[in-house]
Length: 262
Figure 1 (cartoon, rainbow, N blue to C red):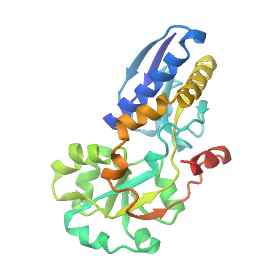
Figure 2 (cartoon, rainbow, N blue to C red):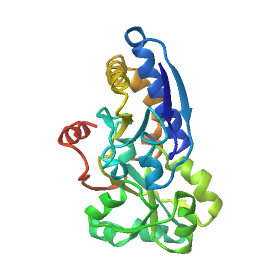
Figure 3 (cartoon, rainbow, N blue to C red):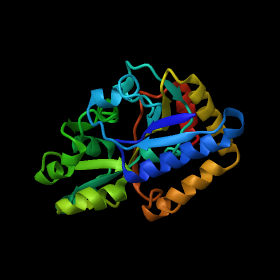
């Protein structure tokens, strides 16, 4: 079985982790489903049409994205409802202008948070989620432009998953200058990361689903998570921060139950 995995539009940390999980799931099912080869393609397709068409026009077999991704609402796909990251992507930390750090340290209520303007690149899946929860969203541009726009004052903050914010800050925000990681606040919403499979590949979907079940049962998924993110909760003080909890209207009932256990 030759598998073409699209692994773009994300941080390097996520690319590595998602590839490791996929390889583990395939290895766990090799006896029943046969040998496999895997090609991981990290090409970015930053537009709505680019990401939405990875199955029907670009020929990929699967990729990972968040549950309920609106770009794929009208696309044929097979979704495997097994969260890959223990909900970590929904623990959102903030990058702000350095001179605004005292201002954010004084935020106590959800209404204060909702009045601050959040910058989100065009077509990101969580823009509608924030709007649903009454937050002020400035949506537009690309991820590459995001931190320059934050520095210029177009919005007040950027929020990214705890799993990727340190890498994003070092690689993208720090070089811009005048920006910093906010140390006291956390925005949480259930935001499970799932594998989406080409609708013409039901056998592959079955294999991945069975493989994920096995690596959960044998502890391999837990070990991969610990290797990649084990010290992150303590390092970023996730349990000590002032937390604002949001609803995710795009979750199925099944996933909502699963995410409550994360």
